[in-house]
Length: 281
Image 1 (cartoon, rainbow, N blue to C red):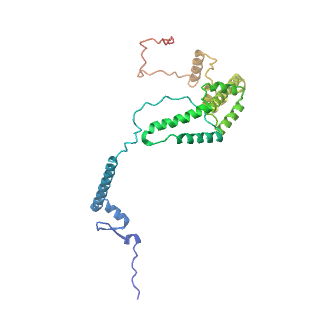
Image 2 (cartoon, rainbow, N blue to C red; image 1 turned 120 degrees about the vertical axis):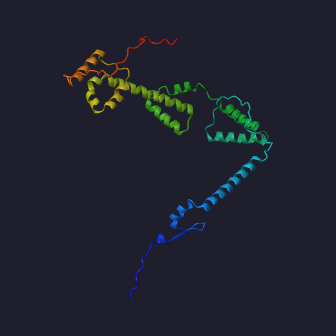
Image 3 (tube, rainbow, N blue to C red; image 1 turned 90 degrees about the horizontal axis):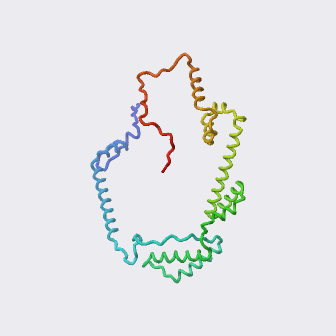
C-alpha cells in the first residue's frame, strides 16, 4: 500500500523566531519587521539610553570635582614671553652630538627640575642649550646668500642638479638647498626663454603654422601665443577687417545680413571714454 507523499516546505518557512515580548515571528525577516513597532523593545532601548546618560553625567561630575594640585602652576596663564633669539648652528658629526649630550646631562644634574615652577625650569633648560651651541658653533649668518653666490657662481645647470641632489641626500643646510633650487630654476627659465626666442626667429621659415593650427588649434596657442606675449601681428586693424569681411561674404555673396528691427540697438555712451593712462597720484 502506497502512502501519500507529503509536500516538503522550505526550511526558511518552517523556522519560527520568538521576540522578547513573546510574539512568534516567521523567520528573521518577520522578527525584524515586528521589532520596528514592538513596545517592549522601545522600552528596553529607552532604559538603556537613560542608564548610559546617567553614567556619563556621573563621570563628568567626578572629573569636575577633582582637586587641583596647587603646587603645579597652570601653563595657560598669560605671561611675557622673551623675544626671538638669533639662529644658531648645530653640530653635524656624531662625536659633537655625543659631547653636547654629556654636557647637558652634567649641567642639569646641578639644576633640580621640579614641577613647582615649570616655566622657569623650561626657560633655564632652553638658555643652557642655546648658550652651549651658540658659544661652540656660532650663530647663523644672515648674509649666507653672499657666501652661496660665490660658491655656486660658476656652476652650470648640470652641476647645480648634482649639488642639489647631494645636499638633499646628506641633509644639508636648508638655506643652501633653497638657494641652489632657486638658482637652478632661474637658469632653467632663462634657457627655455632663449630656446623659444631662437625658435620664433626661424618660425616663419621652418614651421608650417597653417598645418599646426588645423591639427590642434589650442595646442598651437599654448605653444606659440601663450609663451610669447611680446609678438605683434604683421597686419593692422583695417587689413584684418577686410580679410574677415571677404571671407564671410564668400560663403553667401548674394545675401546680406540685416539686423532685424526687434533687436534693440545700444545707446550711445553718455560719457566719452578716456584714453589717457592713469597717473596714480
